[in-house]
Length: 308
Length: 257
Image (tube, rainbow over all chains, first blue to last red; front, side, top):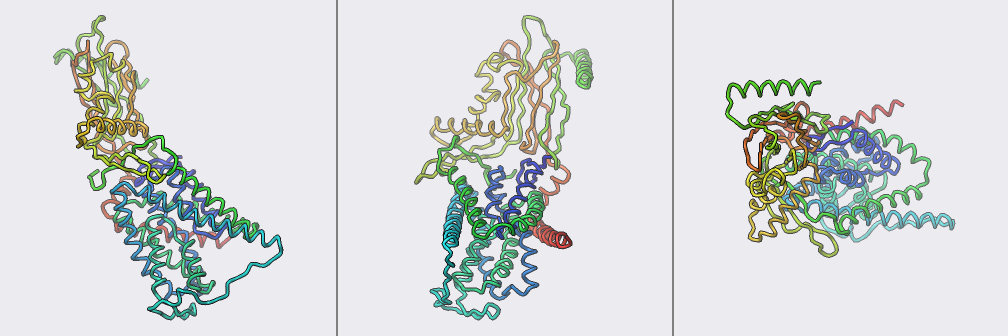
């Protein structure tokens, strides 16, 4: 069954999009990740214009993170003060990111920048994930326990403008929080990801936020930043396709339910190794488009700002 | 059966016109649909253009028909990729003014058998003529470069199925009647289209007829598109609210199991 997308202005197969949302939802349920970093590249591979893929991806993440955020909230796992500081940074990042996308589109470089950003992030994350999990698997075979870093302080804790966060039992500078929030806001606006894969490790290893509030607080921030990005892209770039987003949401939430169940049968290290492989595969696919001589050197784009 | 019936209607029309007006050579045409709605399940459309040839159709001098369909025009930016530090980067942007976003040409014989290249160029019939026209709409000194960019426009649009050429797309039935299929893919732009029917004989243009065709988003698609462009802030807020509702509904649904 074909469905015509009014904003992307192409016709897609309803079941193919549903299956794609389902597959990414399945993976995100299984691995406990957002999945935006897989969804956006897949949408682009399908032929959805990159700007529409990014903005619609942000809209879809609102749906996939809101229930998690609410559940964490009920359990008291959200540090609202910390989340709000992150969110302030995120708001600035989102506003800047949306304008950067607008500018990059007008000079015809958005497709390139998003590909480069994805190749870099997917390469680093996939590589780290794979290396870490293979190392853990090897350690396990040798029967040793992985060593954990125990120090509570690092260079971040020497920065000025400190603030107290009672829920997280932290007394740290607001600068790294604002910068981290800003970075994630930019990533949501430009890449259509939730940014969980950056904010969660940064909170754990850099800021030393207690692990029980990390997920809830990052979800709290992600819900608001992705909502803001959706609205900003709607007003500045007109690139949010509600119809596409709804199809992805339906597939995504159903897939996630099955993913969670499937995840219970896999070991943590093996799962991370598998995810690392997949992330690297998507990265290589994007890199090959940038490096290999394309069969068509010319490209067309509408003159932005011209009346349709 | 419907085709035959339509042909008969057109044919009767010819006779009527021929008797009452009788102004010599020309064509009259009709479309199976002059409005094409783009709805939620739009996956392209096929429109038939029927026509009849008026005037002299003697054996030694058979007429030929060319049908050109032009869509709405817009300026486009063409860029050429260059390798920089191992990566292919879009460079050298050039603006091409008034590029038809849809162009299809069909004829009863290969174009150059119907009319000389100079005349086709002048009328803007065929891809070669189109490249020629587009080259003039690029603001650049280098004529060879302009031609390469124009060729790229035609090639890329053809690849997207927006430009089509069928050397023998016009079927002549009997002596006077003809039919042509206008294929519109799912990515066809919306706007005002024109079907230009040209009648040639012995390399000369005898008659021309323009039929208008309108392709527009309609129903739910039109509503969403207008909503997104006219009330972008509200559209964004609604998109977020839908996502929140979808997320909460999913949780509620799966909790019961």
